[in-house]
Image (cartoon, rainbow, N blue to C red; front, side, top):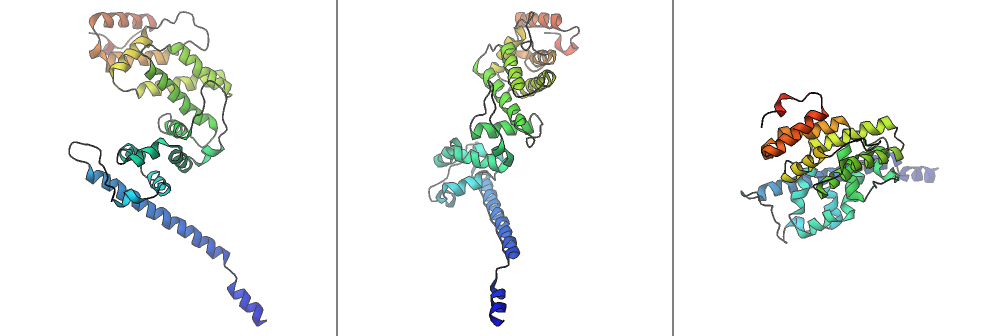
Length: 283
């Protein structure tokens, strides 16, 4: 009896152990958060007046950390600081070029991404970095819930595909690009109406986020001058997208026009749209 009661006293309390395990997880997470805060403060304090990226000496405590620990720290730092962090040391820059950091960041920010199945179609999924950026775009630019199904990650990949194509050429065939977007959405089970709506949403979001550069001006001008004719579905570009292209040209880039270019494009706009805004007029 005494022996059995003594054994009962030394039985592990599994609930207490689990609570203790959870507590340790919180403690470790808190410590990593403090390290992240220290790193961010160090970057801010070591940036000079000329806004040059800071560098770190080899005898710095941060320079002695193992790569797996560095990855756990970096993925807890806000994404806006990643570009600065990658410029501090060559080792850190290599981490941001590798797959391990992006896989860890993907698992932390989007836990359900590991369950996403690869889809078919002309626009593929890509590696962890591409997937992370695509999910970030889907959530923060396109405003969709990334925790529902793989189609929401796919929208981010479509956005990136379209952005890449507009950056690669100054004369993109926007009607062909639009058809590719529609084909990808149809292959993944979207109806014709859903595909049209989503493709238009992606076009408009991308046009809103293009940088105001000379290259963007040339690309938009080329898209505006494309002849639609009687293109079949799915290559006919939505009127909302065409309107947005002309709006950006006549509002954001009007100072880059010469007189002949302006006259040509305003003539095309008058043919496409029944009425045009007053702000587009006047060179």
